[in-house]
Length: 176
Image (cartoon, rainbow, N blue to C red; front, side, top):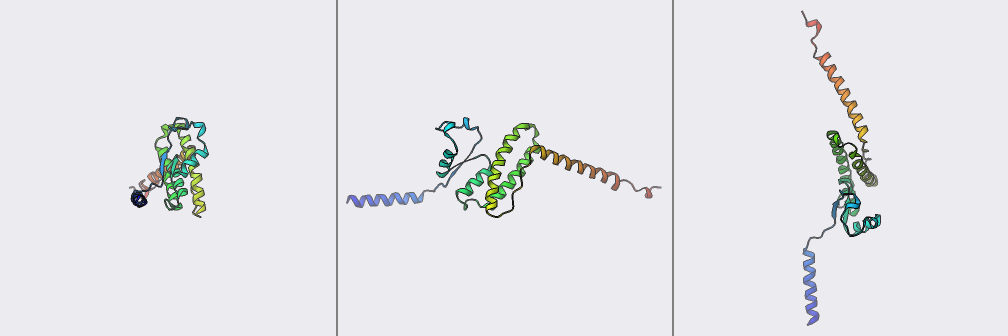
């Protein structure tokens, strides 16, 4: 009788476990410096092995959307494909460039954000290369971004001036 009750209880518990949603992983965006984060272990105890252990348990720490996409792909390529990693990477670079262009007041603080995104993009490039997809574009430095945009603006200004003076100027032959 006791064995039968234990079997029934085990079967009931099994049914409940199967009915509950299964969490594959959790993503945490690291926005604070390592020494300011909340964890049981001290920052000195939290190294690559510590991160790896948590990732194996399904806790993914990332610095950017690109880092999150790469980690999800590595966790299980069915969660996010290499093509999707490439798309997230391309959009991250475009959005990052737009943000840097529109908010230059952030100044030198862009450098740490650039560095973090470059690290994640390097990992994304490995995923993309392994899938034999086209290489991702490199993130330009803030300085080269502004130089390029200044050249484009200068060229566009020259074309505009040419258009205004040459193409819209009254034709001298039509003048009486």
